[in-house]
Length: 128
Image 1 (tube, rainbow, N blue to C red):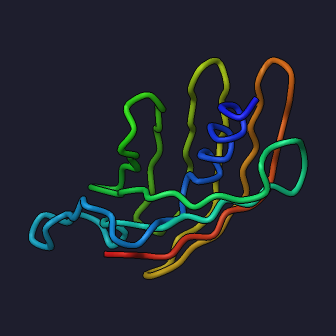
Image 2: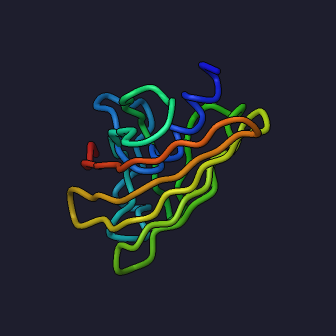
């Protein structure tokens, strides 16, 4: 259950970031206004998932990524800042959507496994 809770929340993660992430996209290589490191706070409002987590996410050329290869993260940020992300691991999945501005963002997320469902909101801030 703990793995499910972390995986589902990571989806809401879909978009807030932790300071001090080791990955930094060089400024000369940034391709969208949202490229860089972000800290995402994921909060559960409904369901049995843990209450909140912070995750470090990266955006490069509008694509969202996460450093842990055991968790599949697929997502995009449009040139206007609209976000959609999906996360899956171990038979669980979650999706999030929302909007980023120059240095912050917010949105909603939903996740499920074969036995449980959770939902909530996320908040993001740029970290580099």
